[in-house]
Length: 399
Image 1 (cartoon, one colour):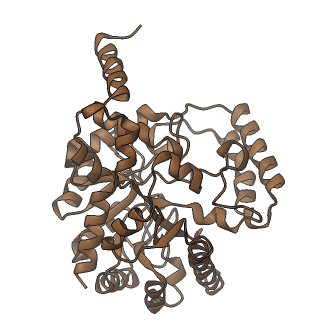
Image 2 (cartoon, rainbow, N blue to C red; image 1 turned 90 degrees about the vertical axis):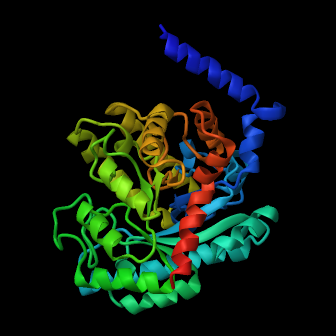
């Protein structure tokens, strides 16, 4: 039975869904906004044989969440497309493989833009975005998730910059040569000497620094060292869910005080607490490793893999995060730091997505919830892209 508060919220959502001001629907308002996501792992999909980003796909059949038709339906104008490198061994061989992998992925992103000039345009500065959106192209900024491709030769950051890199995430789920991960035991107790040098070089080149996945000590040290505001490109609230990847309220306030932005993600384990399930993890582990080989899998093989993953998930059920959980994190962070320091980085194609927000076609639901919570159109516009462009512009002005 609904409480009176819940009934009021339901009525308000219905009213907002029908009309905003002057008879405009939420969908129409949302489509007018410049909507950017700061963390798209979609470049992993680009390696698949016969996978075409201009065609509509389905998460249920091929585990993808972003393509041009769904971007148009959800009003997603683009964002940062990530060069994600799984962390390998901290050896000469591991560094070499990471170096080769990173260059292959950035080439793949640029090839996507070159192959579909009507659909995509490479953005190098925040100021490039309005013209790209006006031409009805999708914005392609390039970011790096895990700086290990630079470990063999940190000076290669200049090469990546020339190729379009504009955001740098230092670390992922394991420690690397530059920094400690939030989900690993401390090795460097923050940044390594090479990591400190990399932070300063990124500042010099005008590359936005990203502290998602970094340990608390890395966060503190990057915030202190950086001459420009920094970003957490896909993080949520530790006050709500005590996951080490999430940010506590104190760090959120310090990030905002230096002009930074936190982009809220939709990664289920960051949004809700889940009891450990070793049997489930053991069954899913080989399937996720198989997914890493998607570049050699046919569409039929990917569909079969998706079905096997679903079967394991059904065999070992666990609580499912939903849109309400995502909104709870988003509204809490907005309450802590205000609408000038919050955005969206849902981690699409990298494990993000919850019930009610399963791919980018459903993004207007976030706008609906923000309006229902009392945020104005101008505030929603900042959350959907204005803050991201502002912090990028400030990083680019410092070099």
